Length: 92
Image (cartoon, rainbow, N blue to C red; front, side, top):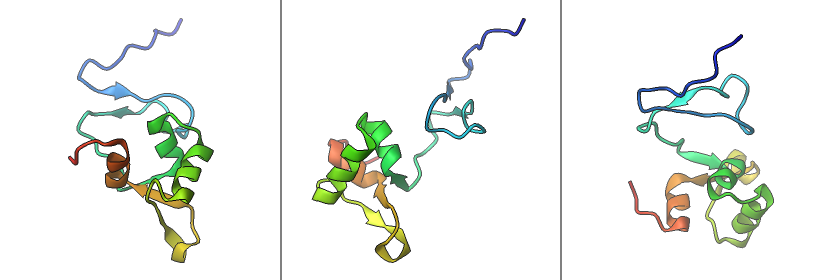
């Protein structure tokens, strides 16, 4: 019988669940890991606990600043600083 999962004892968190590819599903993330410089709308939605469409609406209304790659035709990306400003968090 397999052992039940035990969380890491060295201060790391295990990341599970939807939105992560299978090879990332059980990876660990230390408290000092940083976010990527640009977040997708889906990543922003997970952090804000909103739907993907709600985040896209915020971007289209200009309430959440975003950039588009590929000469402005790509999917919107939100900078970490823009997300922090949107939620009112101080800069790191």
